[in-house]
Image (tube, rainbow, N blue to C red; front, side):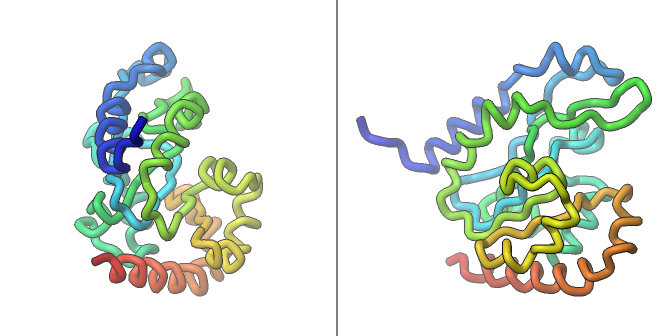
Length: 206
């Protein structure tokens, strides 16, 4: 039986993902008691993959990934404006969970439900044959893709990973401002290299 082109498979998969309600009961039981709203943002022609964690409350409301302060910081690290960052024909944004996980009773972010990655991640990545550069944003993505449990060590080894087309990054949340101050090498050494690599990959798109 013929295999459908990646573009067709990606279009079919985005429709399936947008309709996913696997975690409806889980989300209804959180402090936010919200309904699923998968934020799906990729096409088969993308060259750069941003592997994030999960949408936050603002992204849940807007339906646009990284449309928040974390996104502002991430785009600065990447050297991109919002228009370039959200061009899904060039950049695929594929988090470890596609829906906002909600808050717990204390108002803290809940982690991405493992069910999401187990159900969807391999299928999504299979529709992205042109990825040349992968950004692993935060602990959940670093753990899934690299098997690493220590974010600082993974990010410190960025030169080794970059040689294979992968940049492990800390999460750009304001909560990591202290980490950035303690690890000044990240913005002094890793970020400039990341910007150059992204520019090279995106400029090579015909």
